[in-house]
Image (cartoon, rainbow, N blue to C red):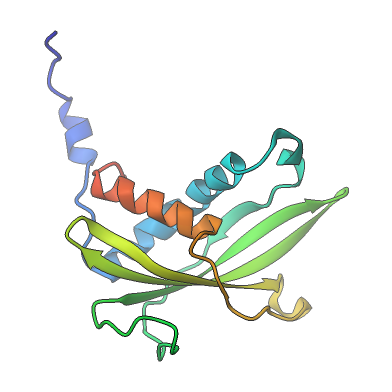
Length: 161
């Protein structure tokens, strides 16, 4: 069976995944809430859907490196990306908002960017409303999983410019 070529509009919409972290970050954070919400829903049972957290937005990224902790990789290729997310979760008849602080360690590979490690801290929203948790390793958490899926899609040219 012969298929006609893709319309020019679809070809033009595909982009090459940025190799620079400062160009990659805004695209990632634009799409991250929807990717993360899908990861969260896929991990849960039907009866849990009413109380699932919902990622509302991801804040502007910061890529200025911090001194790396002893447990983090020291490879100069590893890039650090910091951002916050605002999350809403139903508790009974009310909603609670949380702010998550994320630290992703990414490295470029021959197949594109890969997550090396991910750390997350949780705090109340607004920020003054309570204490912030200590950093926890979150490489298997919803944000890291969503980032991995997004990076795969970016490498495939499936991310809109």
